Image (tube, rainbow, N blue to C red):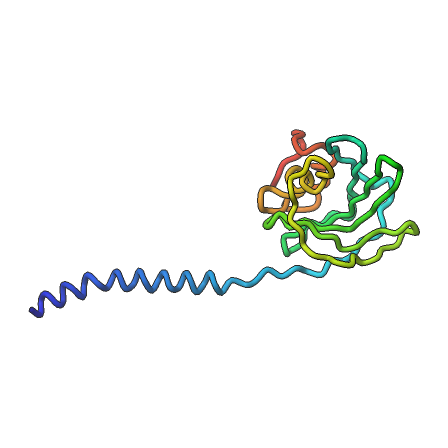
Length: 174
């Protein structure tokens, strides 16, 4: 009888160790730090010579990114200034961010005609949806600023993609 108990105990030890390992993994995963966004620093107002045009379809509006404003934050957010010339001649300027991990976009500030910024009223993260019209956020996410759910490694890579095209041989994700 004693030998049977020892054999049974020997069989149960690996099972208990496995269960404890799973508990550790669950506790470790649940203990992950919650994502925390860094405070965005609003860049200087864009200058015409720094604007990089990117194509969207259908044509009509013209979309540009201000090259010096592009940054990749430690929080995984790619921030940039978007400059839009509408088909009717109006100009819209906004400082924005894209969080690649969750495929979301956020407005931080809106540009004024006098070259100043006003903080966005409702700076909430919004899902980037695939659209036929006004698909510039989708294009920035998929072709220039993100590599799947990861942001590009640095601003230079994003700027090169905008300058040379996301599928140009000079553009490579590092």
